[in-house]
Length: 173
Image 1: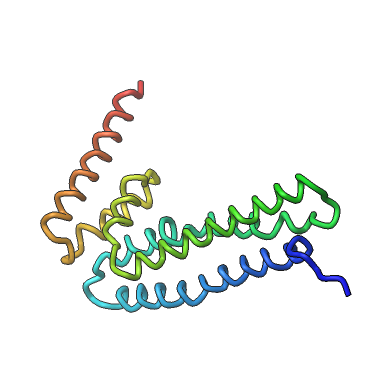
Image 2: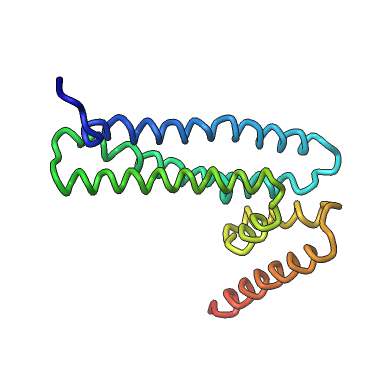
């Protein structure tokens, strides 16, 4: 009887691991979004609009999750017609996708542990879309949840965004 080696099981092991990790994201998304909608229903929105954007764009990175999924599964579509170094490359690509999914799960873990300020600040620093900027800053200034230290940090980010916008319009003819 021949024993099957690890190499012959790779086409099923790695995608199965990827599928298991991606399936962990579903209940996490349900829990976090349920919490969001409960906060949104309250009179004091407590940064709920900002948090929704942060959750989708920084924590879950919804647009990137699609890419990570493709990275995990697509290399094994071509497994049967590839050999040698191409299979090694396909395996490495898939493992990179799995590592990125694990990174996303860790971000969700840190968010649920209450480290939300780090994510909010990171999101606000990177934010460029004018519509999202208005929503984010309106959520911040309408909230009673921000303490003095956070307010100073947020004001510094806000003023840098204003400075950048003013410089952009000064360069226009």
